[in-house]
View 1 (cartoon, rainbow, N blue to C red):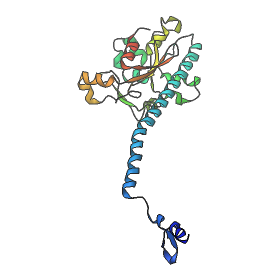
View 2 (view 1 turned 90 degrees about the vertical axis):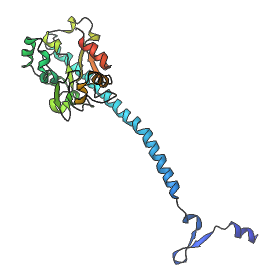
View 3 (view 1 turned 120 degrees about the vertical axis):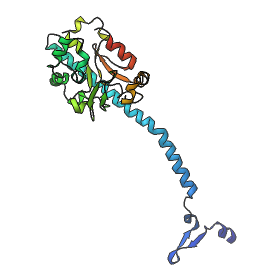
Length: 248
């Protein structure tokens, strides 16, 4: 019996001042165990970071779409006060790239004196943040512009107060919604550049030297787009081009 008691007693060793310390407490993690834990944490971080990053981008994309819907309502309210006509205004791209209107000299001359659309819509929105795309990272080169410039840093919103491009033609032709043949196919507002919501990168100066290279970059562009019937859709570059080039 005494032997059994002796065998079941925990092993101890003497510590400072004669205190007995259980032998099991003298051993910590080995270097190998620490490295294994660090490796597992690093692996989990590498796997989860892209998921969290994509989740944040999706949330910002949804906020952008919500902002466009609110701007659509603001345009509708403005039109109620303006005989049903679309706002006679322009966007930052029109102001920066007047040369693109050279084929229509009468409109080019008129655009110079028009206000930015956000200034006309401000009375119909609760917060100026509605004018901003959360992913607005600015741009220096206009999409599909063959080198057109729009200097906007750190964001287009910070530079002009507005992140979106307006279908200015609706205003210049003094159009109303009732004149549109297919409102669901006519764009009203969209992101100034598809790089913000794109799955690739923005256009750089080097891309402008080679058409095929430029097209490769732009194929990854995505545009949150508000149509005149108030629905919002995320468009690819080719879809955006087809919508933008179609007649109202």
